[in-house]
Image (cartoon, rainbow, N blue to C red; front, side, top):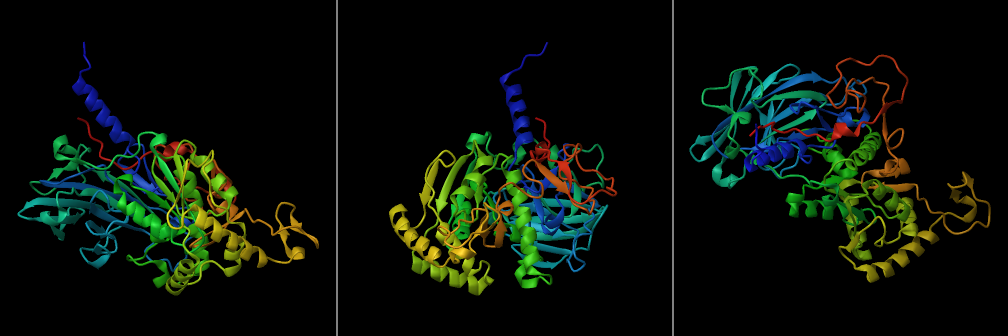
Length: 513
């Protein structure tokens, strides 16, 4: 007979938590059921994005290693020929609270398939290029005195040490296995395989084979939906929403907020650590449109995953706020209103225009001013916080904005009534509310583009593009991984069932205790 002791219960609980950690990868990175392989979404605009994942456990001592194999470079024929490095992987180590953009922050160390290494966005030549079917070994050595060394191998051949830091600089923080991919499917050997791809150097232990007390657990995600939080930013363009969101996320690293906004999407489209504005050869408006479509889809996915979010859009329309918050029922839903003085708003708008160009046209801002309403606590908002001007002062200034916007509106005979499908006749009523529009820092968005009913086909489905990508978002095989069989034929926008279960997994160390 077998008696379940407290020790066994603890072990089972630990294993269960390992299998349900959900906040260690990008929303568009899908981990297969085996927990040791994954791939990014690649349809349409997602093919421009990097997607990252970090393991649940890290290390602070010993000589430890793991392996990564690039199983396939996913076809992305819909990308323009000018797209730099459409297939690339960056692999390495990072601390628990760094972003998923490996190699672009301090204590985030990555070696990429372009033959470059990077830490804190400082890129330099290292090793050699690698790609499909190559196996990269990752080694970390805490036993070289006060230094910590990180080295790599390619297909069993050592490439030497790529990074060095000090134990003093790490200050006791663990380093975790981390991968960042662009249109590539990858597989890991943390030591769970009966045979490695290539034997490790003498003295190194696979991280899977370490004792539990020698591994450091990363931040755990919310255990239940009621513990999850979504903060909805509310404010006019350039008022400071993104600044507040980024600062709040940095000040609360244990929350691991996912910021959902066009700006955050553009950060995942970087080339060599630089935003596309500085080095993009294609049409900027098309790229913004692609980013907006990606954002719509990510908001849909977000509502089905237990994480903490900040929705970084204008959200000035009451109907849009209700529509966006409805899928997050059960979360702690809060509004954060950024309402600066008029002088500060003008100054911030000018600063943003000088630095980034004019994203939102004047007529769009005036339309938002005309229809801006302040959020109140209600059935879909449990709390409302005013970060700058408080409610009464904000309300007084808002009345001026409402009047300014209405006076600047089109004459009655030119107002478009989207509820009736045509222009109003002369003598029409008040200024038309365009509740089917919203704007973000990235540009204009339609109703389906502001996190509403969704991306090509509405909530609950995701439509396969004409390019026949074999890595489908959904489908009967999505829980168990990806299909290598290239889709043939089929019409444009053929619907594929959305399988929300496929998004409930993240890369982790499969450890038994």
